[in-house]
Image 1 (spheres, one colour):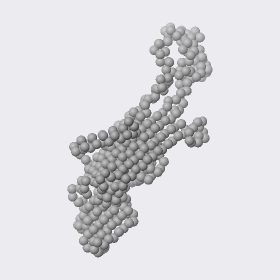
Image 2 (image 1 turned 60 degrees about the vertical axis):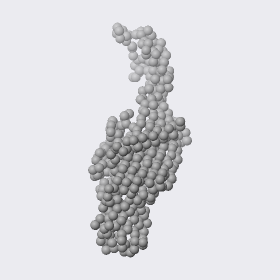
Image 3 (image 1 turned 90 degrees about the vertical axis):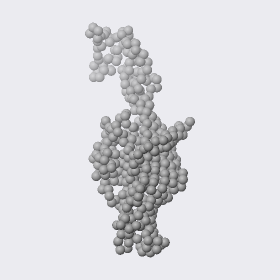
Image 4 (image 1 turned 90 degrees about the horizontal axis):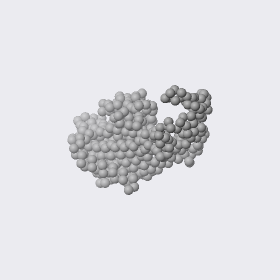
Length: 465
């Protein structure tokens, strides 16, 4: 079976089995993505209690309703990111509608509404972009939106590179924070002077940290990400896992409209100009391709989104230098290899028999003294290229990867919403041995797999005022 199709079927099977078999016994925790609050007043500035406030996510057509309290205040928490329309109605006042509201991850904004006297049938419409003013969080934050995620050039299409756009971030040496036990795409980034592993990574509200050294687990490819924010300085208590910063990422979801994409990115040194100081062209050959697709299953109720990215990576290795036995050495003649032309410093060496402390005549060692097991291994070494036994060789570099992501959003009612997201990342960089050169086996291979599943359940028991 075609590998991408098989991986998609495997991912769908795992997701469906987990959701339908285990989700009823799980304890779900709602994570606040964005929030809108404000005060509804009359022309004199007095509060209007009991006003009906409705916010509608225009891409899905889903609505949330609350009524204002005695002071005219309202709060709409746990709102997914995206475009919205706010409507307010109260007896004796014209209906108020404000469009052009775009909520981003982590937003906690205040939108005050000033009603005008008149019949409810009359309407006041405001179409200007709402001013997204933070009223409750005093953190320093920046949102990396979808346009920058997709349009900005990324080496290897790793979204974590965009964290550096926050201004107070820079990469730090990996040291012992990164190794063969971490996923290959893990990175160490210092934000606002914090340690390289002091960043808390969230994906759709769920933990996305490698608990081994506190670096990040893999992030989905750019076309599957909606946006993410970078917050630092006086972080809220709910983000207390790591003190440096919080990277809060949100994946894309389906809407009432069908949407999708196909992409392919190719990097090949054969089509590039040679570096001015390089002797050869860049040998990296990286091919990344895939697509996304999302839409509705039931209009205004049930939505889906899925995506896949495949990466093929090939690169000629940097040249390595080693030394192997020459044909003369295999015949017992160590004269050349122990002579001044091969020994560092230009001074030859005299080989001594360890059994009696006497030098070997003319640096000749009887072949009967050679270990037969070692001789069997020598046949897997390349032939020496000079009298000193020098050989130059390379170990080809690979790094193939498959990413699969799927998400389902269910709006059961205006009070109850659920979502589930499954992400699968499979990376393969096996150890290399062509059966001829044993020297290429010095580097261990990596066969890595990361999976994450996040479930969200939001239920409003009563209107929040």
